[in-house]
Length: 333
Image (tube, rainbow, N blue to C red):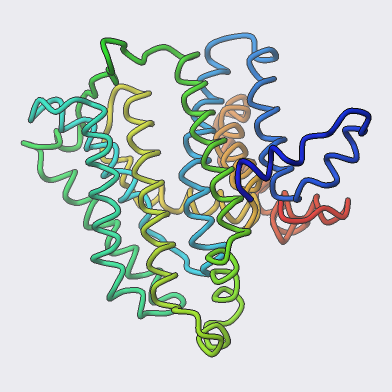
């Protein structure tokens, strides 16, 4: 659905809003709900710490949304996605510090580098299927993590390095509230773009590949090309999220590229619901907010977190958002 077609669905005079909402496609209801939540949260959250957590949720949800395209629609599991996150993060750190490249240009370079790497590496490894592909991406992620850890003269090594603030046209992006709106705006735009992708011929082709690669190939779908496009898209979104995370924190370390970070992204996508736009946001929110909420349990924090995640998967097997949506007869959120 294009922006014009969304505008055409605005309620004419005398039409009840509820009827207008019913006319809106289900996946765009999810985007609309996300936009409303983004606008309301600053009125509810009473301090900068809570706004900072919200901004982190949006940044991680942005990366998870890209991974969800790969997993939820193309049916590919990546265990090395933190590597692409690190490429974007270290690009905005190394560019200004080592080569006097403006932060905004370093951000673009980082995203392009991640997309190029995904394109080059994706062509051979996408021939693998199932857990073989997952292990191949795991190896890629580990290689990137080793590079940023060992090349201390360039990346700062295990201690990481400081990241200069994003400056454009003499204006510097700093502070919790500006970053809240920046990360929220990026997430809403990405959700809208993915919602359009899902309803496009490319999105239908990806869903066909997810259901059966053989059947999709028989129907004339170029399976290799669509899988590679999904891989490159998810890598670019991860790199952009990594750049935002590094610029927001003002510091980057090899933890960004760690294996546990990749597992965290996969968990966010599965927990929230594969193939669900809102699921990516909810999954990111659960894994970012819960550890903060469970600090009171001290030594038992990880035990309680693991137990809660097990309960989610036992009783909400399709993911939090799809399971809840199905009970109300909603679809494609």
